[in-house]
Length: 315
Image (cartoon, rainbow, N blue to C red):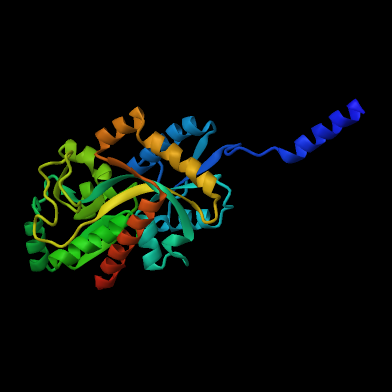
């Protein structure tokens, strides 16, 4: 009887306390919708490394560039919602969905949180006559040749930023979807007259004296470039900060999302990530899920307004 009772107790105990899998159990794919080697890629890879230390498994960076982010977002949208596919998301989730580059809206994914934000800037070569926005607008109006403005790709945040600033100064421009690898080079070579880029994408060349920054599209002056005025300071109704954060396929379990959000926040505030942020000009300002959703809706309305005000999206 004693042996039988022990067996029954053991059996009941096993039934009452089933083995519960603890997330994460294996490596996580970290999808980066940008080319390898750029500032966004470097930033994302460091965040993934710091999150790996927090989660106890490796977040494996995988670059899936193309179509302004549409290829990567489509891939994540179709992935299993099990927490093992995580997106290094950005403002491009709003631009590609509003432009119709993908057959879904920004809310087709679940959004874990924001990591950082930074201004978009307009940049020209160091030897350009356009040291300020006024001279660019004046020359654009008086020239028979349209201004050529490079961006990261049709539907990217840089494309929308370029549309916004060119609309504001009344300049009919040719928008060149060059990609992040060639964007800076086209300005330096003269293939493009100007570009719109995240601050991180232009800062090193600006510091080296090879680029001028006539204006920032940020809400306020960035302390890394304190002498660069904002578009609003110059009388233009343009404000466009770029953000980056994390997203996952819709339906990812709430406890998994919470675990990722915790690891994201710890990684973003780590000493290593803060050092990179100081060097690149990022404003590290983590937002958790609910505040990030509110921000996404606000920024989505802004992006929609820019697109509606554009005469063309592809010139």
